[in-house]
Each structure stands twice: as C-alpha cells, then as structure tokens.
Image: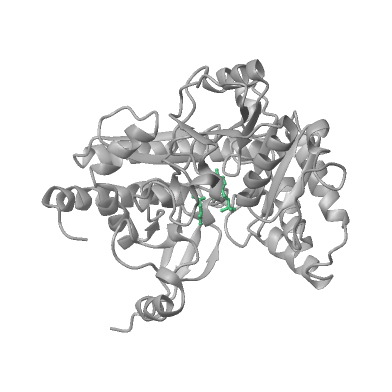
Length: 429
Ligand SMILES: Cc1ncc(COP(=O)(O)O)c(C=O)c1O
Ligand SMILES: NCC(=O)CCC(=O)O
C-alpha cells in the first residue's frame, strides 16, 4: 500500500521522540498512528495522502479565522520581507499591546513572550516577586504549559498519557505548588502568592466555572493579599472580545494569553495593571527576557487576527458551535451512548457517560469509559479531525461554514453508530 502518512511516521519515530514535537499530537491515547499534514486552508487540513479533513483541532486553538486566512498570510509575508527578527523594539509590538489593553478591561500593560508556557511561568515569578510569597495554588486538571512548577496534576497531554506530573521535575520545584479541585474555592493562607486558573477549563475537556467560582476566587485572593491569575491562553479573544472578564464580571490581577493573539505564529503574553507589570525588568526587579519576544512576523499575524474579530465574529462562532454541540449530542445519543456535550461559546467537548462533569475527577471517570478513541477513529475515517486525546476541546473556527458544520453532524451520526458497536465489542484499536 502506498501510504505516505505511514512511511513518514516510520521515519519520524526514528528521529523525533514519539514522532511528534508535542505529545498531544501523538495517537498514544487513541491508538493508531497520526496523519501528517501537508497543507491546510480554512476549515480543512490535507494529509500526505491527499485526504481532506474538516479540522476541529485548528492548532489547539491558535487559528480562529481558520487555516491560512489570506489576510494573515499577506500580513506575514509583508512582515517577513521587512525582516524576521531584529532584537530591537518595533511598532508592531506597541500596536499589539495597545489592542490587548483596549480589549481587556483591567489590563494596562502587556509583555510579549513566545509561548503560553512562558507567559504562565513569568506570571508566577512576577506574582512571587510582587507579594514576596512562594505558594502557588493551581487546580486539578488545569494545564498551564510545561514549566516545572505547574506540571502537577496537569490536564491535556499529561492527562491523556495518564501521568501525575513529569519525571525530571524536582520535588523542590513543585513543593510550593498546591493542587485543589476545580470549581471549589479553596481557603487560602497568607503564604499564598497567587492562584492560577483556567477561568473556563479547557484541558480536561471543557468545564465551565460554576456560579460563584471565579468571584469566590477573587474574594479569597483579596482576603489574603494573593494575586489572581487568569490563564486565558485558550479562552483569550476566543470566547469574547475581552476574554472571560467580559462574561463573568470578575477581573484578575494578571492574565496569560497566547494562541489566537499570535495568528498561528509563536506568541504568548503576560498582561495586567501597570503597578504590577512595572515590576518586570527593566523597570522592576523580576527578570524575564526573550530573543524572539515580540517577533515582528508574529505580531503582524496577531494584529491582523485581532483586528478581524468583531462582535459579529463572536455571534457567528456562537451560532455554529451551538448547532454543532446540539447536533453531536443528538446523534451520539441516538447511536446508544450516554453523552453530554459541554459547550462554552465556541469551545466544546464530548463527555461520554451520564455522570455530571464538574472537575478533573469526574472528567477522568467519563474518559475511563473508553468510548472516545472509537468515536475519534470513526470520525477520522470519515474525514473529520478531532484531537487525538479525550481531554482536548473542539475548536470550530470562523472558516467552518454551515455546510461544514452540518456535514460534521451527519458524519458524526454514522461515526457514532460504528463507534457504539465497536466500543460495545471492545474492538482492539
Ligand atoms: C490554558 C493553557 N495555558 C497554557 C498553555 C501553554 O501554551 P503553549 O503550548 O503555547 O506553551 C496552554 C496550551 O498549550 C493552555 O491550553
Ligand atoms: N489543550 C492542549 C494544548 O493546547 C496544548 C497543545 C500542545 O501541547 O501541543
């Protein structure tokens, strides 16, 4: 068989650990081997065999306009022509920071970095520097990138691979990290530097905050003088123009962004009030740096995306995502599964089983039913790409037309029937 995906996979595993440059891309938790992307446009990716998939991975949320949007590719080419990196400040960095300040109501200053991981890592250092305290509180199943101190009970690939954390992280690195259940407001003490939270959790499937959770965190942080950090690497500029603060009327002290605001190029950002942000070097004593920080090609892409997003974009995404969520829930349950589709705006995820999922413990119980890998493969066979892990969310983009969404639901109907039979028989994957 002339399977170029498989041939590439065989070459990949020889020279790249596990054949992938980020573990979530591997098929370890669903079985089988990955397709290799040759190109992508709009709602679709095309693999090396020339097969087209309706793509709900969308670079794990980095693309909101869809793949290779022409406005973005033009901006990227123009920026690249002028030089790809300088090591000196640029207008693009100022413009992008101004866009973020303008959108997020309690943000006055922005420091650009190159990934979400760098943003959260720096946020913790800054919170410790500002408060003079060490303890960090994170929530079970939330993922904040792969810095040592946050690799405890993390979601995403750490969860899919069934790991508690990571080998290679010293006990000291996580000794100040306290892990508590999502959707419960912890009682803090005056040694707490900060609480970091995904305000809408999207790395243990999609779990929205329950009524009072975010405002409760705000109150508890204020009570003990700790900083509240919203990790909006997934939700930022995706769920609403100004992120979750627009929707819950709760402000954080620091925000972490990434994905959408880089338009598909490497970016991250740390943002907050000036009194806190000024504590970063060179104005303050908290050091942070980066050769490629504020990269001109990434800022050009990010600016183009943010400027392309208006109220209409969010209502379009909402309408299509609602239809998709309701359609998926209907056809998957008609196939025989107990299933709940969780949705928050344009983010959605599939929880099999009838358990109410509100935190990592309940999410794990749903995943343990083992249905997701069957549904994933049945969808992939039909040309619909979901993430190859049960803890990841789906990312419908602005490029997903009504036809794409309707076709996805139709294909999901047949896929769910196949998956139900195979899952009931526990067919080896
Ligand atoms: C909520 C959240 N925070 C942080 C990160 C880390 O971002 P990056 O992969 O860009 O380092 C991710 C995703 O990777 C994420 O989903
Ligand atoms: N929801 C998981 C991610 O966004 C992470 C992507 C990656 O680690 O490649």
